[in-house]
Image (cartoon, rainbow over all chains, first blue to last red; front, side):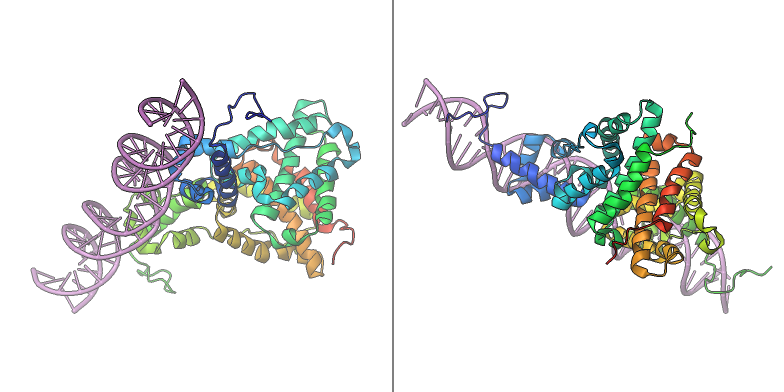
Length: 201
Length: 201
DNA sequence: CAGCTATGCCAACACGTGTTGACTAGAGTG
DNA sequence: CACTCTAGTCAACACGTGTTGGCATAGCTG
């Protein structure tokens, strides 16, 4: 085994461990405190290095945030899911991810900060456009209808994330995943495949 | 007409106009920027007075926030609403409030700040417990079931508020109120009066 | 008018923030 | 070994924050 395992782009610098440590600490802090409250000093302390290293490797706080929060919802391929199971499948997917390590889920981090930072909100809208909207397009061909359906789904899913993982609303935190999958899943299902009432422009 | 019109508690100080001005500016700033980003200096500037006056009249920033954000959802009396119209009625009620002046709605202000400030989140949970949960209790006698139903309703309503007023998700912002009332109203209706599947402990 | 109190402004403190630059050790290379 | 470049620390700057105390002024009260 030679020194360079991945002889593609990065020349495998000696500081890779530190960089990774910074990124790991940043993810945790941003997830726990949001963009503004998470300080470079705290992140550096968690990573066990000097704050100036963060600046050297990531430029500034905004770029560190961008690097730390890479959002891939990993939405399952809707083509492989029975049409009448879409709602349950999607809700189960997200709950399972949050169950693992909420501090590791970029979506929750973004949601926390998007409430007060417009630039983060813009980024969330981008995620919606590129990763959520396509799901609705697999159900309807009409773009306007698909956009509305996707928006309603976002309403439901983000509302669940907000109440369960951020606001910690007791009944929703205590609810068994199965119950939420059935109830919220039914809502998402209706938003995706149910009637809209023909009120589209 | 004598000097004191309301001769009850407050002796009608001469600085009442200033106090009100501070409160008005604080409401706007907190609604627009959230708790942390809204600065005492900015609020004082908006009110046209010195920052130290804010401290004199309201003690500190936290107390100013508490004074500025008084939350009365003014949920309509559920007893006067037909049981099968609860969902639509509730959604229409909230949308109508936001339509007016979002910066004046305390719920949105709280929602913005609750994402990053635990104490604000705790306050939101209080609002939920005292103003939302009772609605579900008017539908079911069982407290555990009522709590779950109220939680699901919160999921739906806060998700809508989040996407429409805070994240500004294009399809939800563009959607006509009627459409949202019908669609989200149906969801709330089912959460309140629909079957739960008997999975309650 | 004299005196007191409420109302307001000004300047400053103490602190935490992101960010920068100079400087030290230490590995890698000729 | 001598030289170079990287990884890292330290101290400090410039700024914005909440908060405080002192001082002027205007209005009310005797």
